[in-house]
Amino acid sequence: MRLTPAEVAALLACARALFTGAWTMELFGSRVDDQLRGGDVDLLVTFEQDADWRQALAQKALYLARVKGQLGEQRLDLLLTTRQRAAEDPFIQALGDRRIRLGEGTDASPAESPCTEA
Image 1 (cartoon, one colour):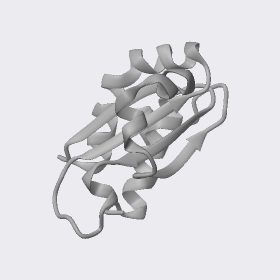
Image 2: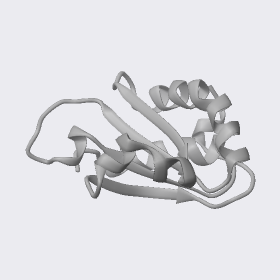
Image 3: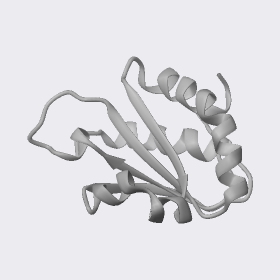
Image 4: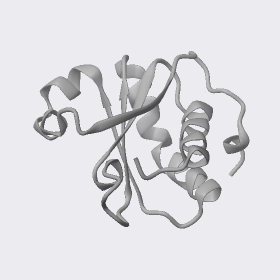
């Protein structure tokens, strides 16, 4: 995996600061392969509940801005879904096991973190 522990921590901290409910974050795409170089950071965040997914959709631009503030100029693609939608999505199904779980969120309300400020 071509992300540093600090980068993973920042990605998760910003998600925990903005997203509610139970979710998992996974890395997919070229950054999963240690043999490749470059590439953007492709993230898949899967929510348990539809309401939390909808709230995250509303926070997506803010999440991307705050992550950019933490990590600098890296290209970041963020795919938000629910477990039910993921089971029916051909793209997500095609990823198979070419994903790396980075972490999760379990709290009903956002946590305090360096990402709480823009």
